[in-house]
Image (tube, rainbow, N blue to C red; front, side, top):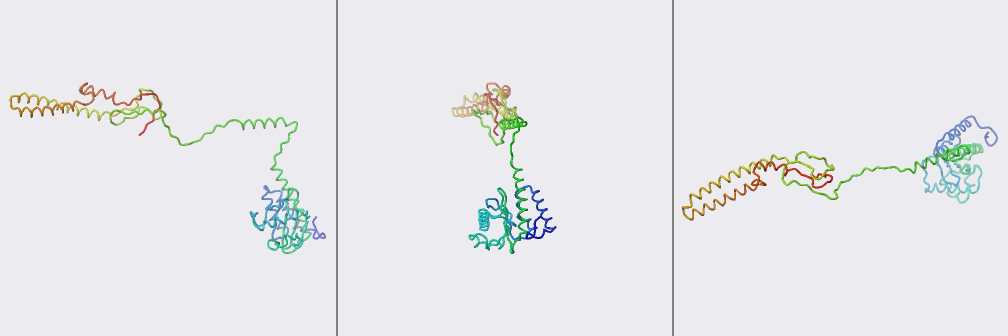
Length: 332
């Protein structure tokens, strides 16, 4: 049991604090949590102003009162240099004053640390500990922290062992483990189909533009956009109401023009015997009437088929048919 200067035994509160710190170390789930307890909560066992936890190569693992020490700061570089000198000199657990430190470090010691220090060296792949304060540390403090440092390094090795994955093949389990590994490798090598959503535009490779020969209003489409259609299929039907109205107007214009034409012919017959000037005027009127008849009768297929036949032809003129096989793309 630790003693005060090797004489008297530790008090019950000190032993209780020691045991609690050991339990906290063994319950730590991460190295960061373990280092924080080592650097900060050991203040409940020994009084200090600054405590530093070092790795076995002298790097700062945790600094009391600082969440993330800056390795590039002058204080951090001084502490690292101090730890490396103590490790290189194989300094045993000891309490010493700044005047006993290596001479190269004594000049800057007072700028960063209190004058008295307690040093616990790191074990291989373990952590070391340095604490400083304004008055000397006792052998009692040294013994307590030496034992507590061993407990924290034991907890550190336990955490490192939990992270390390070791594959140990025994004669009984080797075939099963090998089969599992081969199955996992087979699953990893199996192709995995992936899909990606991205905007796209459909463009015809050999486009064929379909237009109606007449203007009009399109009735509901006979096919859906992007539907595959065959040559000759009806795509759309035009509204024929306007076209039929135009046809009726053209028929009335033709009837009126023919009446004027007959009237003009009658006037010519009655004015032949009148003078040459009257004949020329009647001939000019007849020419204008003939032009009006031709204009009225120039509607598509009207003279050839008549009004009724022309109306029936709307069903062949209005539909927009597809000349070739393909996919329908509608442009509005």
